[in-house]
Length: 386
Ligand SMILES: Nc1nc2c(ncn2[C@@H]2O[C@H](COP(=O)(O)OP(=O)(O)O)[C@@H](O)[C@H]2O)c(=O)[nH]1
Ligand SMILES: [Mg+2]
Image 1: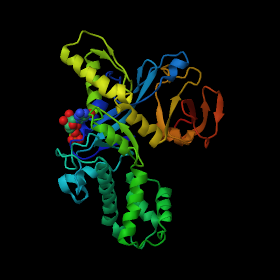
Image 2: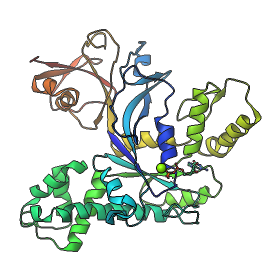
Image 3: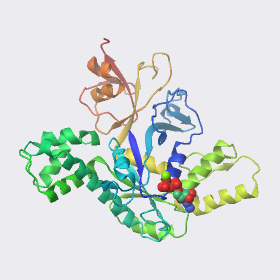
Image 4: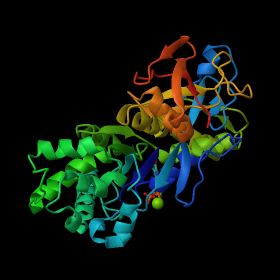
């Protein structure tokens, strides 16, 4: 799972990325090998299932913190996009192409309304930022299609899928978009405006956007957030700088803070400056919005927008463990409706190839290959070893 953090310059993208990728606990084993400096690991927050079962989990990649279990996902900090990015302005095309593999986008807007589309200090309505990104993305996708037009023209819709599949879109979604727009799927010879409408459809389905209404600590943000919420998007008030500050203070053992909470506990005598900083966050962010919004952003994206559920693959269905006895060693985020057979493929191609059957370890029943997996289920897959 890869989530891209996007938006115009100076909105707080890098601050949000730093906050989300700063971790209090080191995991035993890094879940992803990151090649680029702008790629990192964030975590979605879920319930610690082992605790309910009176067990102690021994996760490989996840982090346990009391009643919570944090599951890693990949995050990408995409450099600021400016108007005209799809035409290459400000290295725009290069930055846009970083988004090809993203499953969803978090658009960081400056809810205080104090930085414009170029990132300069000018007051604007943050709704303009949302419109601007939609448009840049639509032109970008249309550009991908147009550059490949000779591979598509006069062919059928499958030729379009071959070009667009890297964007994380399904073949049947591509067909659906063409149907809705009444476009010829057998022999593609679409007009310019039809290509653009189709590109827009592809963008909407392949790159769902959630809005981070950042800098919500600023007084001017309140009204803008109300207006942003009228758009057809999930909008989360966020104060990235507050999340970063709380995580740093927590790392320095000055406070105890669980991401996503509306409070923190002070552990040490603080300097006046530290006290003022933390009071500012408490009064302007936590008391007003219930959290800094940073954790909620990831949770909402993964569980509500991408509709993922959590499943726990195990090898020993009695001990709920792997073969070495590690309890609930891993989680997989799978789309709602995924089957045990699909889960097998996510774990290892060999497991899918040798697939025999699957057990729900808690219910102690067999589940059909094409049945839907349930959220928080513990699954043992039986397969023939190669
Ligand atoms: N008040 C306030 N300022 C913030 C917040 N997040 C970021 N900033 C400031 O906004 C400016 C731009 O932040 P940066 O992360 O570099 O933005 P980027 O260009 O979008 O990556 C910096 O001065 C940050 O300190 C926030 O939540 N509240
Ligand atoms: Mg930046």
